[in-house]
Image (cartoon, rainbow, N blue to C red; front, side, top):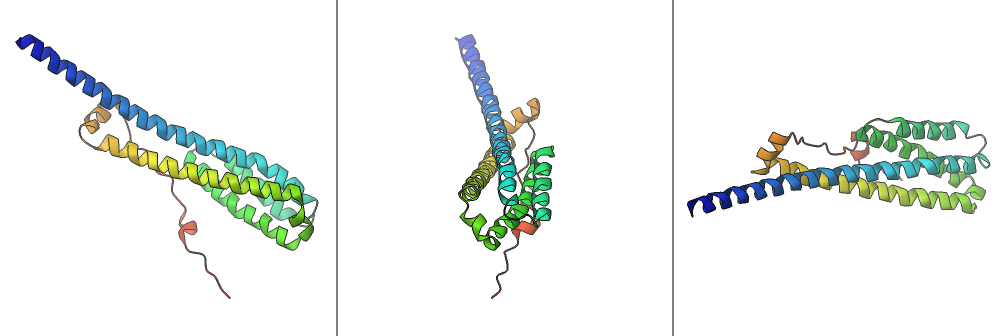
Length: 182
């Protein structure tokens, strides 16, 4: 009888250990998935940029510097290595795109152009998806980091080399509230 109880206790410990290990793997993989979703949406966005630039070129031929800046920023997003670098490059691209959207105010024909309107809508939708993916990633990173820091999972995380993941950070320049002057 004593042997059966010892075997049962060992089995419970093994099952609990496996369950905690598997939950850590699940949290980590979900965070990686959300990181991948950010990449997918950023890729989608950078794929839309050439179409936008070509559409605007026909209307704003003397705005070549603005368009060249958008293309350069797009390339920075494409060439970034880490997720944080991609996000920072994408933030710079967002600023460059605002300049292009401001051009539409100066060129009523461009603003009325159906293709330009569709591209702006696609970019806006993609921006929303990027924002959601960033938020989902940070939420999952928080859940993962909490899991590897709480007892008893922290013991299992230490044994198997689970490391904390970094949250995506917003640059300080974007945290400041915009100033509105009349």
